[in-house]
Length: 180
Image (cartoon, one colour):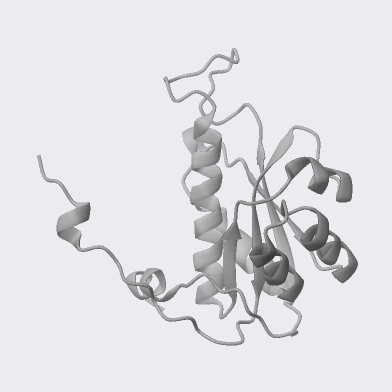
């Protein structure tokens, strides 16, 4: 699959088959995601893949702030990826001070780039995914162990898609691009 085709055909997928994802395939996807650019090559993104259905259901039922759409999506996925980021590296100097006025927001920026790269690699390999931001970080931390020095950035439901969603209407380039 060519890059532009991958970008234009990847959709947020919320309905999956029950087929398990081979571990070797997950490793290939993470290997590709490792090439996402990051602040001074800090590579802060980490991927905790939950395959245990009990844990997935617990997160779906108790950790999405009552957002039913995420509950249904998570209960339906083959695996739930908890994307974490190593804290206090991206956007920081060695002495702990911020390099720019963006402060610690570079961490989320880098985690977002890595998460999208992960989802594009998954799409290229035939998997569907959706990035979710509505969740209760503290409740997830009570449900699974987040490694010390890391913080949750996003949840990604992943699996083999049961259908390919249509592309929503996109804005015209003239609305998005300003040449100065």
